[in-house]
Length: 182
Image (tube, rainbow, N blue to C red):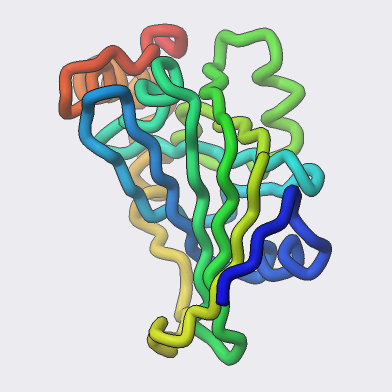
C-alpha cells in the first residue's frame, strides 16, 4: 500500500542517492505529457523539500517549456535491486538557464557535466512511496558514455548551435526558452 509524506524522509534521500536512473514527467496545459528517463550523475537532493537536476542536452527540450507554462513536475525512482520500492516526488519546478542570475550558485551544487542545458529546481510538496513488487530485477553495468562524448566533441559553440537548431520548440510547438543560453 502506498504511503504519503509531506517531504522526503532520510531513508528516501538515501534511496535516491543509490539510483542510477530516474524519470521526469511534465505537461503544458492542453499539450502532450512528457515522460523522460534521466541518468548520469545529474541530480542532487538539497533538502527534504528541494531537488536539483541538471537537464543535459538531448533531442527534445520539453521540460523547460512545460515548466514555463505549468510548473507541475513529478520525479520518480524505482528499485531494480533487492528492496522493492517506487518513490515519487511531486512539486513545482522551474528551469534555470545559463544566463539567469542564480545559475552559478545552483550549478555549484551539481557535477560539471558537458552539455548542461538547464538546471531544474524542484520544490517538493508531496512524496509518495509504493511497493514496486512488479518491477523486475535488473543489474546496472555502467553509465553510457555517448552523451558525454557527444557533448564534449560538440564544444560550447557546437552545443549552442544545436540548441538553436533543435531545442527551441517542443513537439507541440511551444517555446523552450533556450534562447537565454544562446
